[in-house]
Image 1 (tube, helix red, strand yellow):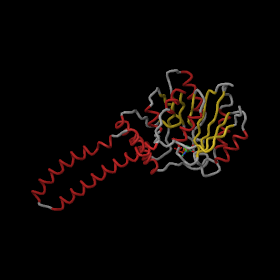
Image 2 (tube, protein in one colour):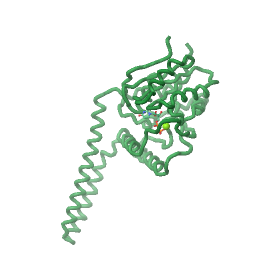
Image 3 (tube, helix red, strand yellow):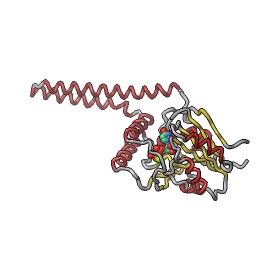
Image 4 (cartoon, helix red, strand yellow):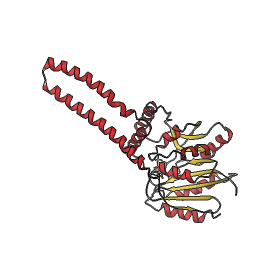
Length: 308
Ligand code: UDP
Ligand code: MG
């Protein structure tokens, strides 16, 4: 059988209105593709008709290899990407969203770069123009600056999950067994030579984004927790600050004799202590889930249109 050159990994969560159009567009853009490629849809516990639609696509397609991994529940895009990687057989593997926001023409562009430059291991697309509020963009870029400083790993602010990886990178990522998968961290942590190309993000075809400010905040927190233990050392700085504060307060109370100042200090100290404890608790919580060594995803069903 002909070797597969390129695997497309497509995480899908409630994408009933998109998966058919997605396949249609891939067919169009890949119509002159000279080699064999495959599509791996990962249905991440969708609560709409996505699994039905995917089942139909598998049944109706015989010219492209299609695999569908049906999760037992929603495990998140990170887990969906990982699951896709476990099934991908291509020399190159691309992660692309199901919502058609990412034009498949860029996949061919990323592939051409890898074909041409054997020193390049991964090509990531970044949004040339962001279709989001200035405040969100500011928060995101500040976050990546902070986490780069704290972790010592180079996080590229703009690079998205929309990227093409060489087989060697995929195998390295598959060997990282952690449960809390912060993909931007993983893509940066593994190293390798990454090039970035700009892409024009399109509007969602159907359905809505799963991100809101609260989710982004949680994602940022997850990222920090997964890639640096610097916050655990914050109490050292707090204690130094408290010592200085204590001396200042002593002098102030001596001069002013105010009991209120002492109360304020007691409250401040209390809050700093409980903050430190909370931080410790959060890290212990992460250790707790990691030591349980649970699987990253549970596939209740795997469908394929290949019968050999
Ligand atoms: N996705 C997923 N699991 C989730 C959330 C999202 O597999 O829990 C998929 C989703 O179906 C889409 C991609 O990840 O294909 C990106 O999600 P979304 O479009 O909501 O993010 P945005 O493009 O707004 O950043
Ligand atoms: Mg999207």
